Length: 246
Image (cartoon, rainbow, N blue to C red; front, side, top):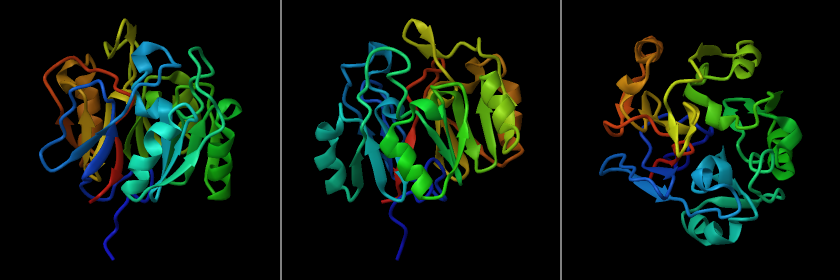
């Protein structure tokens, strides 16, 4: 039977047909792909209110853990699409660290987050499934990690670079890169996502990064194609979340 769901979170093995994206952004991934648009979470600050990586975590194999704030708004739609939905316990609020409970990053066998603030349902699920849980100080973990493949990431956070260099090839880029998030700086992880095993999508023109050449070479060495979604400045949209092949 052909695989229906992205088995390993953030790591599609072929071209996906469905992704979760921010509902307030004009994101177009091609006529063959459906963008499932988020609704706003009014309890967090406006700039991140539509961000999927704030509202939920796709843990792989058709299971999504959703914040209580948003669960009732999504559950019927996701169940109709065949997903298993679990309701988290952490209620999102409009200040740090009460907005990071679901902003964990899963790569292959690793669950990466500031574990002190991980939603307990999410953390229990990760441990039950045998993920190796890695603690980082940066609570906006997924925002700060762009996944290239199961062994390679890009980040602008020194703490993430230091901790994850033990497990991955890490490209560090300047945190002052002009990645937009309203009136604040956004992050490289939140502006990107894999839409295939060899296609890394970025919301904007890669050449608007000062360190574009460094990023391009890092991806080229791993045979990853860059897909620029538009010609604008890079914008953090709360990650492009690949979930389904059909």
